[in-house]
Length: 264
Figure (tube, helix red, strand yellow):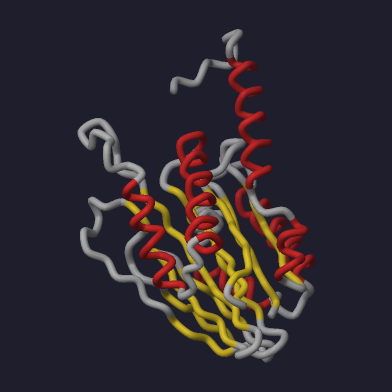
């Protein structure tokens, strides 16, 4: 869709419509009360680039497991936001309605449903979309996390300050022109009370800024999170937002940003 120029009388109508779409998208994302039912301590840093966002998060409980999903849909703005709404519905269906339990099987079913949704689209005029995402299932009884990733990672920080980057499979959900045959795997992580994990999109680390106008990079993000992991998650969110703003400075925001942290 062509964006009206700012001196066009339709520009304000366009912005008003985007703000309505933002309200709808925010209404579909899980609320704090949904997180509070599942997690004792958490934060959500969610900064859309273009009013509406292609980043999303989903939370739920089933099969005596607590689930968290954080995803990053291809593109920006309206088209990516539509895909994020589709993904929220697919995860709700696969985990809550179908009751699929294991994270790698969830991603396999999500990938199948996502691709089926576009099977009648003319590929000559449509760039097949994809979604990078992470999913965890938390088993409190066994003190284990089950993690699967579609081109995304999990950053895990123990109470003693040691950390690890857990890498998922190197292909996304959808984007079937990228990989015809894909198999998702599950990685198991034992945890102790007080450990933290972080899931996110790539928007923070890809932000252009700093003195040399370069990307922030994931290794510096992980170091920043690790260095501040002893703080409460509410304080971590505040200093993380300040770090992003200071790094970005006067540059335009490069991408949607979403980081979700949970203290176990």
